[in-house]
Structures are given as structure tokens and as C-alpha cells.
Length: 538
Ligand SMILES: Cc1cc2nc3c(=O)[nH]c(=O)nc-3n(C[C@H](O)[C@H](O)[C@H](O)COP(=O)(O)OP(=O)(O)OC[C@H]3O[C@@H](n4cnc5c(N)ncnc54)[C@H](O)[C@@H]3O)c2cc1C
Ligand SMILES: *[C@@H]1O[C@H](CO)[C@@H](O)[C@H](O)[C@H]1NC(C)=O
Image (cartoon, rainbow, N blue to C red):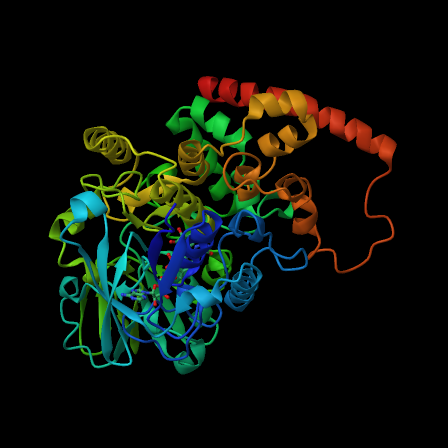
């Protein structure tokens, strides 16, 4: 069989997984990366470059290491659960080295255009024009994987803010924000309560004279350190919870979660009360946010109505003198290299499982990582790539165009019902649901029933434990012999970096533990029932 050549556009986390998946399937990838290094968003740069994703110096992952890892390459056990961006970069470099990906990447090479070849309907091939050192070069590829990212262009809706042109202070987008030094003693308003807004406002509030955090609709605030000190995602993203969610009506989940988050601090009292329910919009990570608010360093404010030369006037009529405005208003993205293919760009809003444009004559173009998982990106991008490379080799078939359209429309209807109308929400997926969905296409979704019969120990961890990506390497294409051990040792890797002070008696004696365990088992059986009863009669 002829080895197929595949173009991978971008060497961020999605691109790296794509190269690896191509190699796994015997394809021949060439990755084009316009910058001079791997990592994409995760590579910290002191001066941001237009069109390149940017992060601030202190950024820490909001997904924990076991949930974030590639499915066949666990993050070293001594790494912290929530990694600083530089640590994640280290991991990406290790991954790249381990699987020999570097030799497949051409750096400082920008993809300028991707166009169907004249015989596309029979060959499915693409002309890819790239530019390096000011010279253009055309390649022919059998398949293209677009991994160019989701956070490339800052979104700054200045038109919504009357008087901003009069404002004499400084204003910037959170994309340009790097560290808090230049805000010492300043009065700052941060607009937007996404993860970046909350993070940046908090960090600046430690050194600024006063920080105001302005939000239109508020947000539900969650925190990395969950019950018992477990990383939030490892505690919540379990198959057990997934089953509970399927059986519990939405209002019950909303109520449970909102009560839980309000128990930490009352969102209404703290000016954070959201207009939406818990499940219908993205949450914000704000581990320290209530601390900054309760110490008065950071004050919550309504939307800014207008700016004057020296101040911001908020919708509630209050006015505050300010020196700096930071727009944490998010990002947009585009695929300028596909402009010659308007039909594909149009269908961008509606791709089959966010990956394949449904109406191409041949399924030789795929988008990786253009979605908003409620959970980590590396595993969702990786499983997309594993599926795509199987389709490229011809070992997996896609449904017909009309079946794909039907699937897309069905998803649209469900999403519209579940989430608020915002472009970002249109691409929101539940982590386990999406992993299972693509995993089923690929034939790697773990079969719990047979596991319970043949490997109860493993099945228990898969069901009750965090739904880590190793689960999708137990069987089928890309099976990894280390997967079982990786799952059974994941809790050790979570605890290892915490246990830096050696304790003499780390655990209770075994006999008392037995009773604790039995009590827990009984509770686990009855809690769901109790919860339902309580809700019904409350
Ligand atoms: C502030 C912030 C925090 C986040 N935290 C987390 C987190 O904790 N956990 C998590 O899972 N996700 C997180 N995310 C989501 C994040 O988007 C993903 O983790 C991940 O970085 C996406 O990687 P990517 O490879 O898809 O895109 P990118 O990282 O954007 O990489 C795209 C690459 O493509 C290159 N490129 C683009 N266009 C071209 C072209 N025409 N030619 C050649 N090369 C091109 C770019 O130079 C870049 O290197 C966060 C996002 C943000 C903004
Ligand atoms: C982590 O932060 C990014 C950037 O704000 C966001 O897109 C993503 O949804 C967050 N992850 C989770 C699990 O909330």
C-alpha cells in the first residue's frame, strides 16, 4: 500500500498528537509550524506576537495532570497536579522526544493556502502552499489535519464601550498581559469574568491600589482543590458521576452544584451571582477570587456603561477613577489559509463531531482541537487525531453526507437547549461523553461489562475513579500495553507530589479502616437515593 502523506498545520498540543497518530498508523506526516518552537499556546513569550496565542507568566493549568496527559504517556509522578505552564511545556518536550516527533516538523514555515487539487473528487488530494524564509513552496498532500488553534485572535469589542476613545489611561487585551509589575499602585478595571479575567484581576489586585472586576452576567466560581483535597476534575469527571448525571434531571444537578459552590461563599453576597444556571454556561476557575474580594483588594462591578477621560461609569450609575482597562473578552479564531475554499469555511460551524466537514467529496480534511471541552484538551484532541488517521488510511468509513448532516443538526438542537447562546457554547462538550463518542467510532471505548467480569479491579477504578485517557488505550487500534498499569497507579501519581513531608503514621490502622470502608460502601449505595428523596420533599 502506498504511504500517504499528511500535512499537519501547527505544532501545539493538537498538532503534536496529530503527528504521533499519523506515525502510529503508518502515515507520513509533515507538520508546518509558523513559529520557531513547539507548544503553541503553552510556550510563554515575553512579547506577544500578533496571531500567536499568548499567556501570562504565572498561568497554571486548570486541568489536573492525570486528566491532561496524552493517553499513552502519563505525566511523571512527581509533577504537581496542577502544573505551571513551564512544566506543561517540559512534558510536551518529553513527549516530542520520546516519540521522535521533531524530525517531522518544519519550523518557521507558515501555511498560506490549502486548496483542492483539480482531480480532488477522485484523488482527495490537496495543494498546500507554505512560506518559509520569504519563499513559497507548494506540496501535494493526501490528507490535511488543521491544528492551528482556537485562541489566535484577541476579541476586543471596543464598539460596545462608549467613550473608550476619550479615555486617557492605558487599555489592553488580557492577551498582552504578562506580569503585574506595571500595575503597581494603579487603579485597574478588568472587563470579563472568564478564566483569564478572574486570574489576571486577582494577580494584579495584590499590587494595585484597587482592582474592579466588571461582569455582565456573573459566573459560578469553582476551585482546583476539591473535597478532600482532590483535584477537581479527578473528583468530578468519573463514570459514576456520568451515570448519576444521566439519571438526575438537570434542575437537580444545578441545585446540587449551586448549593455546593455557594457553601464555600455565597455568590450573591460576593457580587458574583450568575444570571444563568450552573450547567448552562462555562464556569470560572477562581481559587483565590473570594479571598481577594473579602480583603477588598478586588471589587465586583456591573458592566461598564461608558468611559470618560479618567474614569469608568458602570451600569448601576457608580463612577470610579481608573488608570488602566484590561479587556479579558476572549478570542476569536479563523482559518485564513482556507479562504480559497469558501464552502468549507461556511460549514465550519457545523462539522461532523467537530472534526470533518460533512460535504466534501473525500474525507481528507480534518479539524483537530476546534472545540471547547469541559475538561482537558490534550486527550480530546488526541482521540480526534486517532480517529482521523484511521479514516485517512481507509480503515474507518464515515457515514454518508446526509447522515452526517442529520447528526450535526441533532447536536445543534441539543446544544441550543442546554447552553446559552454564545459562539463558544456551540462547541462545548462534556468530557467523558465526547471521549466515549469518538472512542466508539474508533472502537476503543472501554467495555465495562466485560471488564467487570474479567478484571474487576480495573473495572472498579474505571467506573469510580477519574476518567483518564488511558482508558481508551486498553483495546482496539492503538492499544497500549501500559494502559492497565497506568490506570491502576493513577491515584499514586496524584498523591506523590503532595507527600513531600514524610509522616510516621500516614494511614489509620487497618481494622478501623475496614469499618470506615464498609460505612462508605453503604453510604455510596444510599446517597443517590437520599439525594433524590431530599429533593422531592424539600
Ligand atoms: C489562558 C488559557 C488557559 C488554558 N488552560 C488550559 C488547561 O489548563 N488545560 C487544557 O486542557 N486546556 C487549556 N486551555 C485550552 C488550550 O487551548 C489547549 O490546552 C491547547 O493549548 C490548544 O492547543 P492547540 O494545539 O489546539 O492550539 P495552539 O496551542 O493555539 O497551537 C496552534 C499552533 O498552530 C500554529 N499555526 C497557526 N496557524 C498556522 C499556519 N497558518 N501555519 C503554520 N502554523 C500555524 C501556531 O503557531 C501554534 O503553534 C487554555 C486556554 C487558554 C487560552
Ligand atoms: C481552562 O481555561 C481555558 C481558558 O480560559 C478554558 O477555555 C477552559 O474551558 C478551562 N477548562 C475548564 C475545565 O474549565
